[in-house]
Structure formats: structure tokens, C-alpha cells
Image: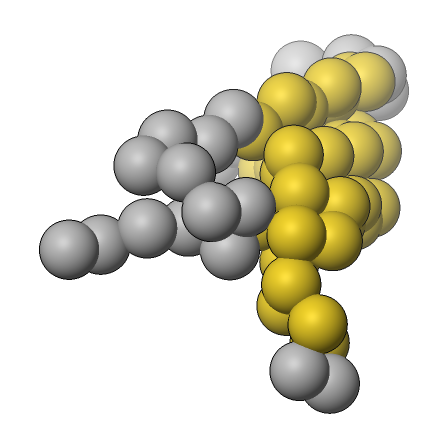
Length: 60
């Protein structure tokens, strides 16, 4: 029986992305992800996780 590390059969992920249209072909972005208590580390679980991602999108 599968379960997430939050001891439930469901989990949520929230994401926020900020884009800046620099030109017609180049768009830098910053993304923030929050995973609701799905983390596990060093034998502990039910830990909230978050991450940041910075990147550039190219439209060819």
C-alpha cells in the first residue's frame, strides 16, 4: 500500500513562477516549489520541503 512520507495517500505541491520576457526569444525565470510535508531525511519523515530553480527559456 503506497503512501507519501506525510503518512497519507495524497500530497500537494505548490509552485510559483516569476517570468520576465526579456526579448522575443529569451525569458529568464525563477521558480519556487513547496512540497507539503513529503520529505524524509536521516530516518525522519513528515518534513516540509521547498526548492528554488533559476533558469532561462529560449524560444527558437
